[in-house]
Each structure stands twice: as structure tokens, then as C-alpha cells.
Amino acid sequence: DIQLTQSPSFLSASVGDRVTITCRASQGISSYLAWYQQKPGKAPKLLIYAASTLQSGVPSRFSGSGSGTEFTLTISSLQPEDFATYYCQQLNSYPITFGQGTRLEIK
Amino acid sequence: EVQLLESGGGLVQPGGSLKLSCGASGFTLSNYAMTWVRQAPGKGLEWVSVITGGGGRTYYADSVKGRFTLSRDNSRNTLYLQMNSLRAEDTAVYFCAVYGSPSRLFDPWGQGTLVTVSS
Image 1 (tube, chains in turn cyan, orange):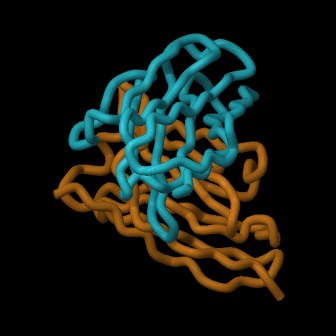
Image 2: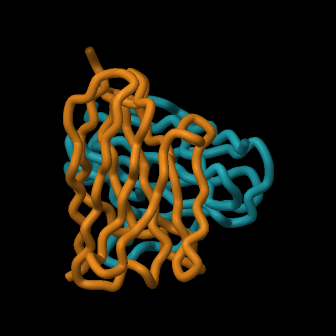
């Protein structure tokens, strides 16, 4: 199985900050990586797919990059509504796996 | 508008069975691959199963293989997850989602249904 390790697991930041979350895969997954945002009590929301393609309707302050085994999600200028938990996901092979999550909180 | 609505969750005893439904509106479910993802209380996301579009091939996580069965009723535009031999560790909110291809992504998602396995 492909393991995904996100870092950091917890991040405290302020509105306006630029933040980066890293996702490392235990083996190469090409660009079959997606990022999701989840708020308490809600379903995950797709932000990025194919490592760097912004899902329709997602603000342009979100961006993704990487290929192979190392990927990043960047939020260029944090807004109050961005405080949530973020998950990466690999869809290169079964079983599909998720990272453990990164909880982003207001400093 | 594309929407997914899960139902069928509830409290069940260990060893029992439950069948979850995921009703689709705004699109024809049989034309798409579909998936279930679960989230135990306070934990992260865990992929459970996929059924492909068209031919309906299924894939399962090892944690549910042999106990869960994914199927769909095209006439009802509904996806099902039959869960047997339930364990305490199956307690979770279960989400269904469209598995988009060829881009490989899960979107959109339903709101989830809670399954609690407890005596």
C-alpha cells in the first residue's frame, strides 16, 4: 500500500499568512494526487486534483505542485474561512489512501 | 444540480448488518465510478470501496474485504453498501462520492451517514 505522510500535522497561522503543507508518498504516484479541505461536521471539499489543477470554484489563493513522491499545497494569503483540516489523497493505485490530515488553526 | 444523499445509517450490534444507500440526482449514476469513504469519530479519512462505471468492477479496502459489498440499482439511480459482520472499528460517518475520471478525483460528496457499532 502507498503511505502518504503530511507535514505538519498541526499548523497555527494568522489571516494573511502564506502557508504550505507537504505530502510525501512512500512510492511514486505520478501526478495522481488530490487535496481536500474539511470543516467540522461537513463532507470533504475537493480543492486540487492531478497535483496542480484547481477545481472549478476554488479561490486562486490555493495552489498545488509536485509529482512523483513529493507534493505541496500552498495557500497564498489565509482567509478566515480557510481554517480547516486538509487531506492529501493518492489515486495512482488501489488501495486509494489519504494522508493523516493537517489541522490549520488561527493563531 | 448534482447531488448525493446517503441514508441507512444507525446503531447496530457487533456482528450485525446494515445497508447504506446513496441516492443520486442531477446525473446518471451508472455512467460514473462511485466510491465510499468513511471517517471514524475524531479521525481522518479512510477509503472503503469503489465501483467502476459501465462494467461495475469493484475494489475494497483490506479492512472491509469479504464483509462489505458495493452495488448499484440503475433503475433507482442509487448506490448501495451492504455491510455485514460489523465491528466496533467500523463505527464512522460514511460518505459516498463520485469518482471522476480520467482526472481521478472524488467530487462531489454526499453529506454522510453515521454508522455506530455497539452493544
